[in-house]
Image (cartoon, rainbow, N blue to C red; front, side, top):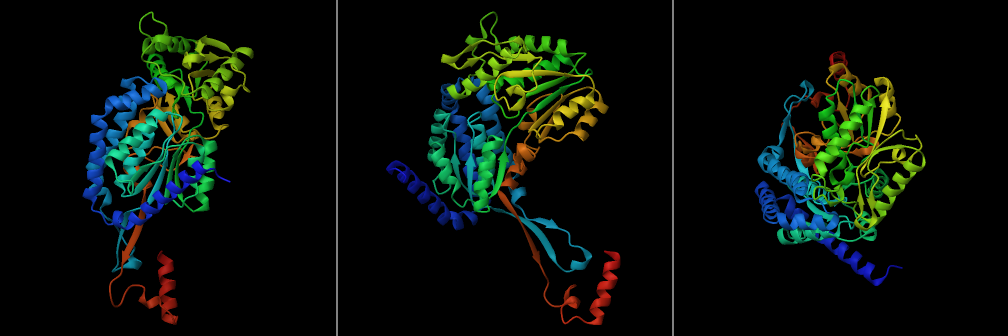
Length: 477
């Protein structure tokens, strides 16, 4: 039996969902200008409340304010600007050519709102990954319920305040809370669910969605590999790998999870990586623990998980080239660069999602590709090489949700590229027009002329003439 508090929460969610259902007919007939007005209000709120956003994310895990602006705020504002600039074109019916057998018809595809959408956001980039999908959902003309992560409670509270300030809850509402809230939401017949998180939870979301035949976009994760070939610019590679891996304390779904480097340049790459970590995150000779440029692990549970991974590496004789210092009270873990890793170690079995970077070596490109292909398909693949044949071989012989060559992570920031995984790393795409389509039903419409048409001769009763006509058509189709 649910307790009184759980019943009150479930009743409130049910009532909210019902009111959004009742408002859907109005929402569907609104002009595109109304969608734009909502997006403009959202943009203005974000711009005028940046210090509040900075503070919330610092309180959650000491995320530096510049990092918040660069990754969280920039992406949201960029998505809004992209939608505002293109919404008239995206919503315009797209004419479609008809085959000769359909002479006289007119066809087009119309992007219509899916309806009531659920956005389930993670804790690692709690503002970006809640509000980025919200922009796409609003651009497509939907109503939305956002379930932000309870692990970043300050940012979740800020998102609720923002949405309460801007939107009527018949259009956008925020449901804070834990697993019980998520489970209740997943029982409701949403028209689309957008989930960002781990593959394990993604499977549960997809299973729940199947009960209502709800479409899903799943942005998951996995062990995203980085290949560094002998032809790579090692200085560039080291800096860009270090930024993408250790920003946000490694808690990034598209962070390099492990590096496969050719044995001839392994030692040099490790040397460069240790130098770049100091250059990027330390202030002079001050200990990195005192740096204002380095975030923290989100909570004690994840800190314990990562500490266990590190302890196992030390116990099993892995070689630690940098790092190892931890402070449980502050949830601080120094960036770790490690090699000589046992294959059965946790860091090679599970997505790390923290500041531990395993370095593996390879002797030829085929063995590196084999290492990647024996694992589930990753969300991102990074290639550092100045040789075209190497890059083409890796692209042809591997599969990943996204690929970036000679950099890491920046593919997420290009709203003209689809972003998403494949199989274990996700289903569906987002960002820009792809995000708009994720929250839209592409409805095909065909208009037939009155009177005699090209298909009239094929109506029953079936005559010898109809059969001869079909025989002739089938020869040329």
